[in-house]
Length: 399
Image (cartoon, rainbow, N blue to C red; front, side, top):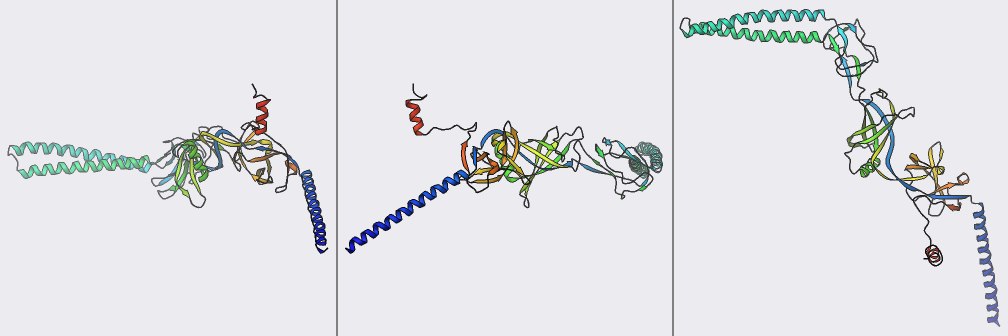
């Protein structure tokens, strides 16, 4: 009797447990169905790729190839200036005049001294020749001949010295015309006409060369390594474009033709430099803008439909699905547009699943309901094994 009671109790307990499990299972199904019903419907597409030139856009600064300070090389009063501030001047063009009278007189005195000494040298040259002939015939003592030769050599040396003084006087006279050492655009005049200037007065003005013009920019080592890998080496020149601080793009491209030989340890970047012909003088030294640098060869670049991209104050972003089909917000950088697709320079890789519609109601980490998965141009839907068999027997594969 006791055994029967135990069996009955076990049966009742088992029935209760089975009912509890069944109820829990049905409740779970109902909850999942409810979640699926409440989850926002979305369309998913995979990030594809396009064979394009890799490009990066980074901050840049315009600098002159040379910045030359124009200084006075002699002392005197500044009497004239031959340009207007901001003019484009050519190498050798006269910019200033320093009072020339004193230096012109010094040059004239030096020239007169040269003529005087040269005339004496001619006289003593002839005396030495006569003495040589006389000493050969023993008409004069050897000492007289030696004295004549000594005077000749002394006047020759004096002639050389006076000619040197004359050339130095002419050099100082030429410095009264202050000329542009290089071609470029001239800056503000710091010493005006009428002032007394010396070789220690500092720069009279500054010339900034403008043709060509340099643009320097830092490139992250990861970006530099990517370009190096694509182009097959570091020592290559690359096409660049300059974007002004206003956002307008300069219509003439430049060439990245220099890289520094070290990495900045504080920023992890390497300094690059591009050269622009700048024949229209559009680039101005000191301007801050942006540089777009392109690889020489093409490479597969991630691309997604432009409609997938949203934007807020922090930048452009998309929603991707993780391994559990939960959405997450990912910030991206774009490098251009090709038709309905945007090229992605950072943030995504080929094959990432991106939400393309139903984005407005998506909350990161909250389940979504996938209603359609779009097929990109770079991928095709592969049939499963049953589809293959069906197609083989009854479909288009059957001959």
